[in-house]
Image (cartoon, rainbow, N blue to C red):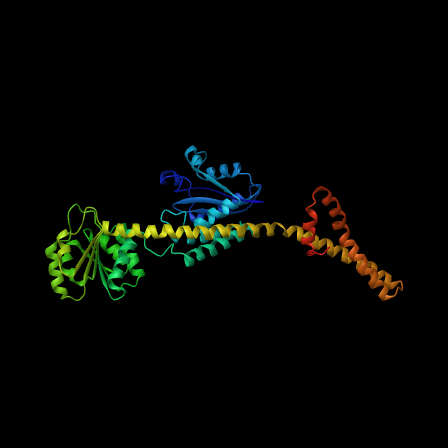
Length: 418
């Protein structure tokens, strides 16, 4: 039985091709039940995210029918999908999974979401009865390695998205955010992410301003904030310690006179931090000249992000070394697992010989033979029967391979005794 990874990801295909081969979370269990009915597929885990669809299997090494099965799930033969599928076997499959779990194969190096997605995939496989000793051991190991990578390296130490970098900068300026007020201008994806990061940092008060008051209400409700219309900015700007703006407006929405008036009303309560994440810019450049106002644009944050990415790339090298050592450890564990059936057979044979010898010894006692004589016979007979086959086979093996005698000495713990 060998390990196989078969998949497609952002590394090999654009989204318009990847989306042809995805599985809804509710469909994964049924797909696995169908797959494990296929001859030779003993165990399987199916991973399906926006960036990858991967099938991990313990199988007989035959991949052709697995490819056909996977393509069928997407609706049938698809030359573009087929051309972008990749395969990893044995140690390479182990290495790939560990890299995925550690975030080294992600669009953003070190992102943590994939680990949770792998755990969900593992649970789905367990629920579908598709797990066995090989994949169970592999996935448990990959979860432990991902945790080790995060604790022993700086792979996830720094923010790498515009939204997370913006909130990270706010924390550098203010420290804790729990007693602060943030005013978010816009209601798109970037502002949504900023709101999520701010709430995760314990932000106390959130105001959302948008040209569409309905959209502002929707976003504010999701994050326990309150909404205002864009033309109410002047009335509320002084309440904010942090302003984050990301609209699609072709012109500035926050002007220097408005910001200057807000600063006057704040009476130097604290600096006003304004993060303009829009292109073209939402905030007039003249705002940067105001006293106690700190204005950063998206380019400023991109410099922070690139520096953080450089840090993560360096950490990724350390993570790669951890993964390489774990691949070797898992390979050794797998070989030990392969020995289990042989060990079980050896113990079964010894148990059978013991029972046969005991029955014969009991019969000898019933015939009146002295107990000491029967015990001597039992010990001698059992030793001979257990050692007969190894002794005979060793003589034959040594004739074919002189090194076999060293293996036998190691097997029986004979050391260097001659």
